[in-house]
Each structure stands twice: as C-alpha cells, then as structure tokens.
Amino acid sequence: MDELEKVPQESANFPESRHNLNIALYLIVTILTCGLFNIYWNCRQMQACNEFLKREEFSFWLWFFLSIITCGIYHIFYQYKMGSALVEIQRDRNKAVFDNLPIISVIVTILGLSIVVDCIHQNEINKLISQ
Image (cartoon, rainbow, N blue to C red; front, side):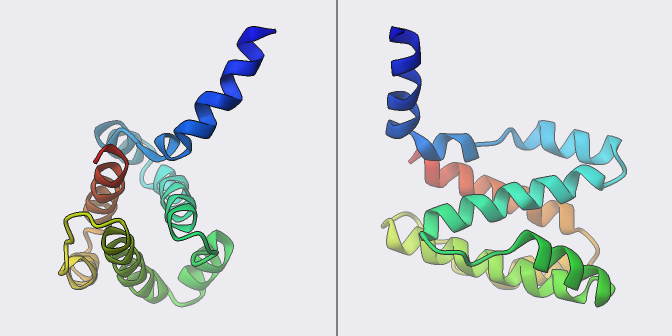
C-alpha cells in the first residue's frame, strides 16, 4: 500500500521530469525508423510546451494534417512557433533565453534538417527541467 501512495507524490513533485528525454536515443530511433519516430517525438515536445505554458498552444493532429496538406510548409511555421514558445517559457521562468531560437529553427528546417531542430528544441526543454 505504501508503494502506491509514493508514486502520486513523486510524480506530483516532479511532473515535468517526464519531458526530459534522451536526445541521442530519440535521434537514433528516428533514423532507424526512417523518420517515423520523429512524429511521436514532436508530439512529446508539443505536450511538454503545452504543460509549461499552461495552455493548449500546440495541437498534434492540427500540426499533423496541416503539415501533410501543405506539403511541409506548415511544419516550418510550427518550428518557428515551437522556438517562440520555448523562448517565452525561458523568460517566464527567468532562465537563460535563447533569443534566436525561432529564426534558427526556421532556417535549419528550410535547409532540410528538421531533425536537428528537434534536437535543439529537446535540449532547451531538458535545460528547463534540469535548471
């Protein structure tokens, strides 16, 4: 009975720790699955940002369908939005702010390296949790 009572208390004290993901592992799995795992990774990042912002800023299904319908153009906008949201979270929490994150996210995504942007975003999320 004591074990059952400990789990909610631990998760209540550290609810954000579940968003601290192993970037190398996620990158390798994304490569091994020819990018399919990256869809799940983006979903996890959206959940993390929504939780940090305390509002529903990102919708996985909206992102998914609009990215398909627009042949990836919406994904470029999404990367900008995610970068902007992370900067907002950093400011709200008085953390070191990566001001150029939104524009770097767009440029690197346009160059076809969206997976690199996901690594950068995850690194910023992990830093928010560990600081």
